[in-house]
Length: 177
Image (cartoon, rainbow, N blue to C red; front, side, top):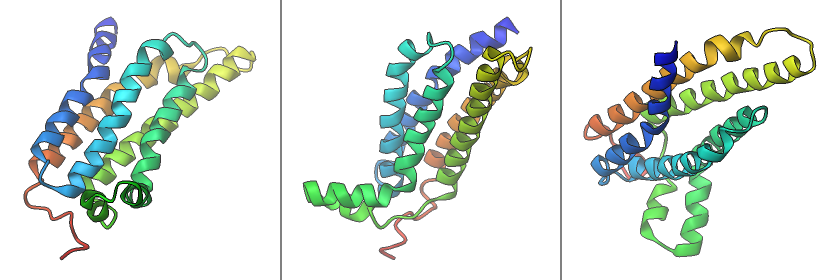
């Protein structure tokens, strides 16, 4: 079990280099570029705050829920976000980005973040129930969450790599076709 937690520590930092690789590889595709820029931005905030929030005992799980929501919010409202940025900057990139639709890879990444959000909400609830002496063992937090997070990090990395490798055959710019 100790070896698994060591690998989990490494996989905490693994998605950012993979997202940057995918961004570099997909730079010519506006839809993938816009989605990956949002993803890298949130991942940078997450990694910077991780060093502080990992020491929070109870509310760490709330912070992870917030960070997952911080990714989901611009993902679901990225067209409005791009429209707002286009109004501010008047850049052609944002004008083209506001008309894009989701791909299957993006939907897979969003699903993985939703699963992580739900898992941390369960653990957050468990911590409060344990502190209130309602339950005696935080089963989900102690035995499932770490393994689930490792699997989710691996699947997130694989989905980002799949997005970058399958980029050429998929036209994200459906609005202009």
